[in-house]
Each structure stands twice: as structure tokens, then as C-alpha cells.
Image 1: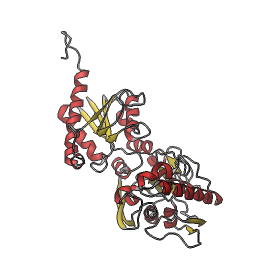
Image 2: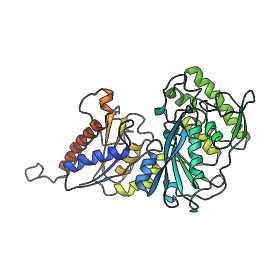
Image 3: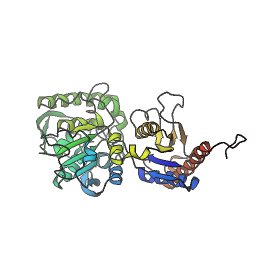
Length: 407
């Protein structure tokens, strides 16, 4: 039997590659003579660097930057070999200075917001929103550009800040002032909180920017960054209202500089980081499609009998652009059986939007959170569940014996 494993990360527990290898071990135990291929995947958030490094030759670079509240930390990013044609998109559109994405001018760097200004690195509460900014991501982009990258792919998702990307732009050389006229950009502060005026946007020259996000939220308003994602980052209702007001002012300031991006899909991604990158001329791409294309996932599932996917939690949001849903669409399109595995499952099996043939929790019984997040425990349970699925699908494919049972 031919099996493809494309499992997203089990956040806080296993990377996509590690989860995939655990599933593959279960498949091999159940079908030693079969073929199994592991394809690391991501949706443009945490894990994107790992997935792209697994898909293409390259190297990991570490830079000293700051986290969302200004504390020093080391963050890694990828520098991919070659000209990055597989990552920049088939169209090869123009960047901020008219450079083409497929001109081969230099290496491609891939950076993640979650690696430097991630929500998992800070304590979430009402004191976080006035302090959390995106300067660390700007420093990471600057490090990549100074290192020779002429194409930078920025994976959004999992950020701790709601600053409209102002911190990122200031770290890249932009200039802005608060409502009293004082310069903004002090470490450990959210520069949007008391934003007044934008004096200058940074100039990255002929660097081509690509922003990866599956979130299509606008910058502000009821569907914008503050209202939709602010509460997840500790914002109280009053703070949400304040941030939405500042995001509206920020959008107007960008428009006054000729960058009317506030209403564009994805402007509100990662607390408004999408708006800042779009203002610098970035092209927006769907994160999963970008990674899947680079990894050759469509080619991998062609002819597969079984596709195993999943992530730490499968719920009603999964079908709305998350990695397992994207894998399922490709797998079903190739005629394979698609089964999703998860640490926690909250999916209506009868929902027409459910893209899977089956969804299975991997843990055999309810576990305390610490045990459920233990990598060894989860890997063992993933392997065991994958083995059961493999045996079941293999049995269903056996021809019937003359008496009506499987041979």
C-alpha cells in the first residue's frame, strides 16, 4: 500500500517532521512491505521554516533580536539555496521596486513571526497589549537582508502583538511619533498604543517581499485585527476598542503615504503585520499553498492509497484554510482515503464541510495536559493510531475470498 504522511505540528509538543515520522513508524509496523513518504507541511505560521528547509536545500541562520516585549532572544530563519522560484509563486509578480520574483538576483530567506514575537514566548494578560510590538520581526528581516537575501518570505501567525506592524517598520528604518510629538520605537512598548503620525516608511531597495497568511482579515473594524485576535493576546474589551481606533488611525496614515492597504485581505493578519508588509509592496500568498507547492505535496499524493494528516487540535476552524484541510483536498483529489489524527478532536463528522474520510483522536484515554503534551507519549500514540488505520485500510482493499470474506 502507498501511504503519504503530511501532518502539521502538534504545537507545544511535536514538530511537523517529528509528528510525521511517528505516524510513518506506525504505518511501517502495520505494513512492512508498503511504501510511506513523509512530507513536512505548515500553513504559513509556526513550522514554516522547518517545512521549507525539509523541502529544499538551505541552511538555518540564527540572529540575536528581541521578543514582543523587548527582551533579547536568538531566533532562527532559513536561507534557501537557489533563486527561490518554488517559493515566490508562479506568477513572479513585482516587489516594492519592480524587481521580479524569478530574476535569480540572490538567495531567499524565510522568517517566522512566531520565532521572535510569538505568543508562546510571553505571559498573556491585560498588561501585554500596551507592551507587545513587532520590532523583533523587523530586526530579523533586517538581518536577512544585510546577509544578502534579495527575497524575504515572511510567515505570519502566532504573534503576540497588535501593533499594525509599526514596530517592524520602525526597526527597518521607518520613523513615527506619538500624539505628543515624541519619537516612537522604545523597546518593550507597543508603538501603536499612542501612535500619532507617520513620518517615513523604510526603504528596502530592490528586496522582494512575500507574506504568507491564510487569514484574510482587514486591518481594523469588526473583522479586523483587534476585534478578532486581540482577546487571544490578552486584550480586554476596552483595550480592543482602543487598539481598533489606533489601527484605523494607522491605516489612514499609511494611505496618506500612498499605501492604502487597510482594507486588503490579510492586512489584519498577525495583529496588523500584514498591513505593514503590504505597505512595503509585499505579495500575499496563502501559507499552506506556498509550502505545499515547495514541498511537492500534490505530486507526492498522486497515486497514494492513504493520506494521513492532522495537527494538535482539529475543530470547526480546521476546514477554514488550515493545513489538514489543504492536505485533505489534495488527497481526495488524488483518489486517496484521507484520515486525520489529532490530540484533541471537536469536529462534527456529519458536517458537509468536513474534508476527511475519518477523524480520530490519537490518545486512547483522557490525559492530563502535561502528559498529553509529552512528546514521547504523543509520538507513541500517533504511531499506534496510524498502525490501526493502516491495517484497516489495507484490509478493506483486500479482494474478497469465494466465501465472501477477505482473503
